[in-house]
Length: 66
Image (cartoon, rainbow, N blue to C red; front, side, top):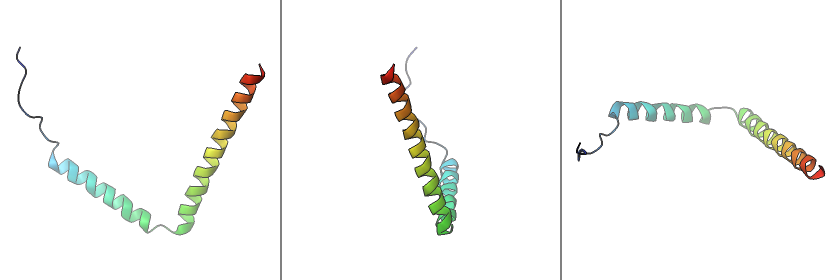
């Protein structure tokens, strides 16, 4: 069968508008959050990274020891 030369249809414009509105709503909410919440989120992320790095180092140490 022949391939269609038709252009791909764009996504439905109302869906894009809905996604954009959701994103703007999220940004507005995050701007009005107290600084303590943002600091707490930063600290949680830093602790998570340190923990995963520590686990990686332990695994590497264990593997080189064997």
